[in-house]
Amino acid sequence: MFCSSLQIPIPSVPVFQPSTPIPERLEAVQRYIRELQYNHTGTQFFEIKKSRPLTGLMDLAKEMTKEALPIKCLEAVILGIYLTNNMTTLDRFPISFKTHFSGNYFRHIVLGVNFGGRYGALGISRREELMYKAPVFRTLSELIFDFEEAYRRCWHTLKKVKLGHCVSHDPHSVEQIEWKHSILDLDKLTREDFRKELERHARDMRLKIGKGTGPPSPTKDRKKDVSSPQRGQASPHRRNSRGDRRPSGEKKPADPKAMPDLNGYQIRV
Image (cartoon, rainbow, N blue to C red; front, top):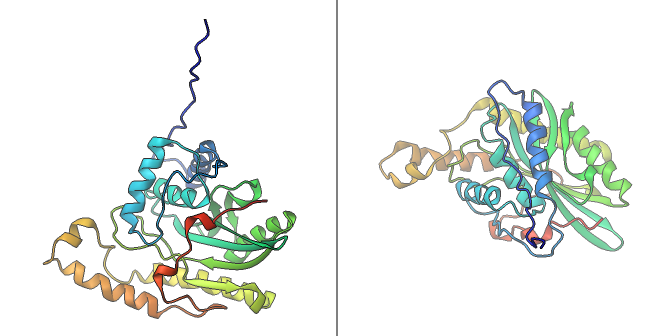
């Protein structure tokens, strides 16, 4: 008599030795994301609200590792942040794409990374060329142009790129991820202007990291402690960061509630 139950292997969360090089860690993280598989079911297993504080998103990422269910691109970004939090020499920032194909618009998102001045990406997609990029690109524009060429091979036309700022490595931070610091509309930019705006964003990220402005990201404990001086310093830092933003092709919408729903991130190519 045959047993009807099948033992489905659950991917193991990667564990690293302190001596493991960052590029090898990124490959292992990407393998884990890939092993979870892309969610083709049409049912969203995890509800992700991009306005949630980082600590809440990290709790959700931990749940993803326990459930080991198929994911889509936005879940992969949150998971990538969670699995690279201990890589403090690695800069992580979201990259969103809007493309046009056969009369329809499509959205996709990956986690951009920068290690040692070289850019790459983590993520998941129906298309192999629209997810992982090893950190070998000398500039941010080279990385984005590589994605653009990958889209072109899929007969998609890249219309818009949204770039966020670097994400905190503090898993208990109550700050929100800045998803759209720069919004670049390719219909309004020449090729050279597009490249310049990408490099301007990369420069802004380097300056923000180099300055080390403001106190550490507020955590759950600091938020509860009314008398903590750190709490009072956090808000001016966020206001200053908003004030430093430069218009890059298109102004960011002022209403944070207008963030696109995760269901918009689907690549049907």
